[in-house]
Length: 141
Image (cartoon, rainbow, N blue to C red):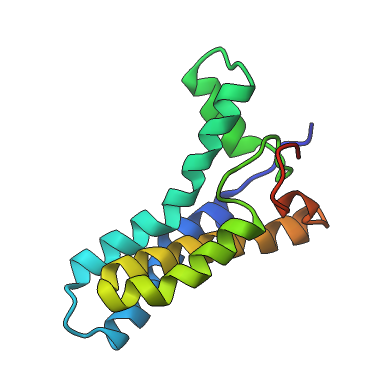
């Protein structure tokens, strides 16, 4: 298996995306605190990857270190069903954004960051592996 580097992808999701979301969010909701907005944007942009824990359960890794090494160096191909990394999850988040934003702007910011993470992964999969069939909601990938 060819080892790939995901440094630019990870930096975009962990740093650039939250900074851009924070900038635009503060222009829309100027009363929000920058620290709260940035924290929510960072958390929202990283949270979708929590579903990668499913890979831990499906593939019996020797250690957590080997699991992390696999996640950081594996090809973009999805090895397991990921509950958030699919079209249905993106549709749900799109529907929730306006509802949650009206109740709690920080919740809306979290969901926007969450959605943008998924869109970035979707685009990355399309470019790097040339297809996105595995984004359909189904059990096997």
